[in-house]
Picture 1: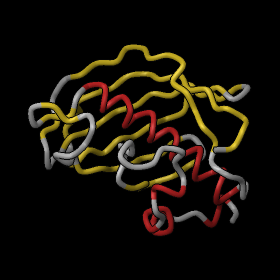
Picture 2 (picture 1 turned 45 degrees about the vertical axis):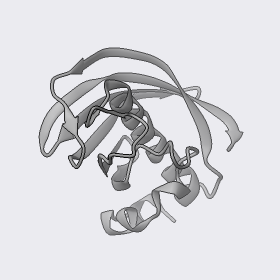
Picture 3 (picture 1 turned 180 degrees about the vertical axis):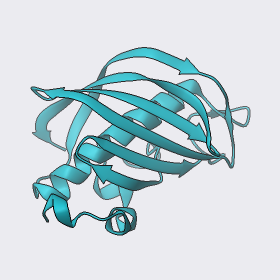
Picture 4 (picture 1 turned 90 degrees about the vertical axis):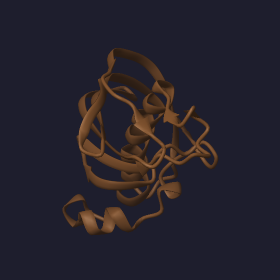
Length: 151
């Protein structure tokens, strides 16, 4: 598939599990909504059985993992559908300016957008925002390293 052929309808139709190295119960994104080379957006509904739900709310660690998996879904989509490669495992290298301004309770819809600032030698620096039912509740910068071995 060529980049010019990627549509939001196609992106939204894929099974998120095909572009992530994580599998249940550690999947923190529900579906990929949008893909561009330098940006991706995912959404997920906070479920009561989520590993990062405590006292009816999604934890800050869960939101950070949601951000990391939004980054991973962008890389995984590119690898699988554009480059025709397997999914690669990534690691959080650094978190900066991570600010939590709200909470997401069970049943809330999270929409997470990651915008790439730089990609160099397998490292990605990106900004991220997490919206809960349309209101920003978390933001920050994340640096991810991608292992060149496929998952």
